[in-house]
Image 1 (cartoon, one colour):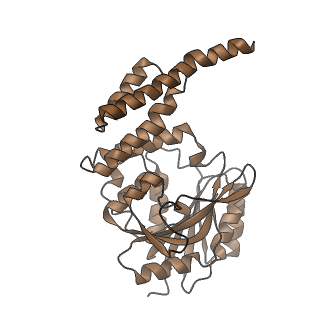
Image 2 (tube, rainbow, N blue to C red; image 1 turned 120 degrees about the horizontal axis):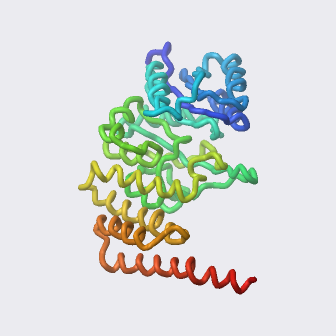
Image 3 (cartoon, helix red, strand yellow; image 1 turned 90 degrees about the vertical axis):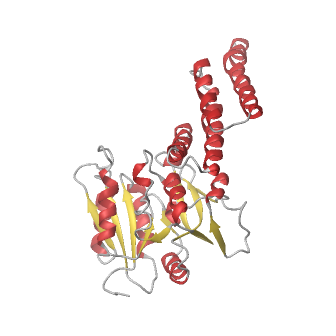
Length: 327
């Protein structure tokens, strides 16, 4: 092992996260490891004081915090140059492993990096490890255990292999807990073709070519607030479906993916849309055609159709009647 190079590069992107970034950076600098590691922290032209906090930590911990400051916001530019900027910076470290933590999340285990490196070093058959985590609801500052993995893993287990089939239970790797071998995400032949690039499609495609191990420990906190991706409600749910459908274009032979497309389209697109005033007959026909394209049975189509009609009756007839009576 070349001790002049960091063994782990932490990939962190932040933008206008002044209330949270300090806790994130503290999670990096508190790590206790038998190897060198660095944190590539990309500040995407923040305007709320995030930059000043990052400068303070970079000055105090120059061997760990390696900042990138932008004069213009990169995320908003066509082609998303942000992904290439942070990717090139991580690759330039010549590290062996990459860990991820966004600027509004944070680590709670000072041995997180050490534990994950130890596992990957002794288990070459796996290219990624992740852990369980907790969720912080910023609105009331309440921290809760997340039960994403409760249905697939017991408390006594040391861990288990995560597979694509576990996505049906929303049990997938969470970015703030992930560590992977450098190059294994970048060598994926499907990812560059995708229109949608975020956690769910990234890890689904990753599992076509690489194995992932879930460590049965909690090492991080995911912060859920108004600016987080999963707080985007119906828009995010629709995005999940569109991401799976996008992958399906390149993997039409994947029967599990087909099932997942049908399930997410039914649960995240057709039925929620039916509860909206702007959802009409043409929308219903369009969505049922898409649902049928995933080889849904006649029985399934009739069941979904019934639930759509029920929702439309409530929106168009029952709710207006209630409003009239209340007056």
